[in-house]
Image 1: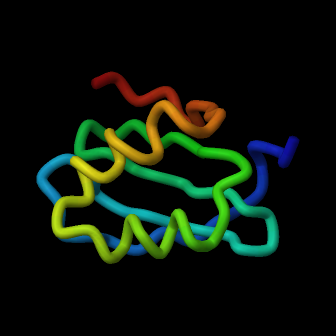
Image 2: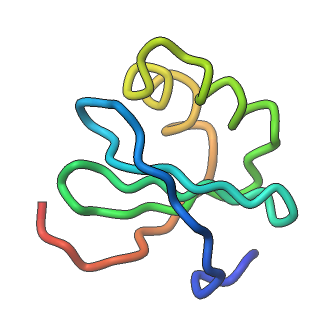
Length: 81
């Protein structure tokens, strides 16, 4: 499993529940920062899954449908929701 210390740059996105996204194709990790301030890392996310997320009309709905329960994850910060 990829280290939680791997730095992945995140880019702000236009979403009511997601603040920013970052993706490393080399490591197939997806970092998602939510509006609550919590940041999660999803592992073994293939490039096409990330591309589908970016192309979705609703990032939050697509995340809930196609990412959230499909990939293993770890919380990266201690922000309180």
